[in-house]
Amino acid sequence: MAPLYKKTLVVGATSGIGEALAAKLHAEGTSVIVTGRRQDRLDAFVEKHPGSGGVAVDIAKLHEIPSFVSSVTQQHPDIDSVVLNAGIQRPFNFSKPETVDLSIFTEEFNTNYVSFVHLVKAFLPHLQRVSRDTEAHLVFVNASLALVPTLTRTPGYNASKAALHSFVVNVRQQIKDAGYNIRFVEVFPPAVQTELHDTKHQPDMINGHEIGMPLGPYIERMYEGLRKGDEQFAIGHAEEWLKEGGFEATRTILFEQGNATIKEALAKYVKST
Ligand SMILES: NC(=O)c1ccc[n+]([C@@H]2O[C@H](COP(=O)([O-])OP(=O)(O)OC[C@H]3O[C@@H](n4cnc5c(N)ncnc54)[C@H](OP(=O)(O)O)[C@@H]3O)[C@@H](O)[C@H]2O)c1
Image (cartoon, rainbow, N blue to C red; front, side):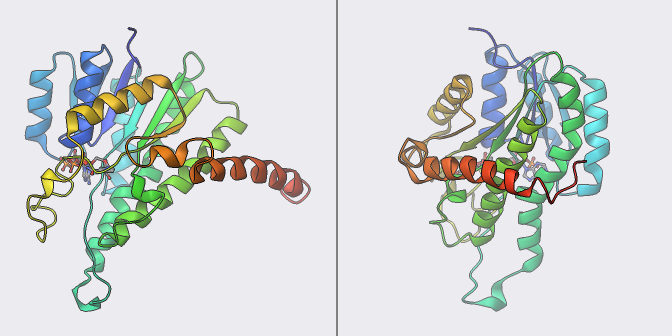
């Protein structure tokens, strides 16, 4: 089968979903550039996957994002797809407010949401150029917790993912309205066995890396979903929510209807730019 994309940059590919997806893309013929903070992991990936590239970046350093994007797209003008996958998850118990470290809360929100906004702004001019000749893709790795925040121990994580979903729905529509050939794809994974819940990140967890679906089968399902080409899809229990009649499918219909109505109603109030 033909490769999914020509060249993909995966943000957050030093472990877990990002690393496994990058390996799968590479195995299926897409060129990959992997990123993350851990240089040793990037080096190991590049050594194992001939032809791939690795660029270290800390996306929580928001001011460094424009120069990172400009440099990587100059070096790789054939990037036609970007997977925004990096993320962290931290527990907070607001019933014991004295235990809540707001600097960690802010770091989590910046990593999972604000940095994605900065990355989208920085990558769009490149993807808009590329999309003149070929279909471009921006893939967002979200979480089923964005849709129903059942895991109350991680209120900041759930809110960051819900914010991301709202942002993706709106910006996807703006890009469509402007006529660009850029597909915004959003994926809602279930719990997956990665480093996300690892004791090193969440010290109150015991064997957190064992939580959820094994990574290998998850990646096969995610790759299959990307190949199918839906704008948003889930793996696991949230699949029902996105099927016809499911609450997220209904929300999508309400968005499309409401957006059309509001656009028409606002036309006489908003100056065109
Ligand atoms: N595992 C799950 O149960 C699950 C469920 C739903 C959604 N997700 C989502 O899936 C995505 C991947 O997570 P994962 O489960 O694969 O966890 P993971 O194994 O911990 O991987 C997280 C990745 O994000 C990168 N990252 C974190 N902070 C970064 C920063 N400041 N700058 C650059 N890269 C950074 C990490 O690289 P470095 O540490 O090297 O920087 C790593 O490559 C996340 O968005 C997560 O929310 C995971």
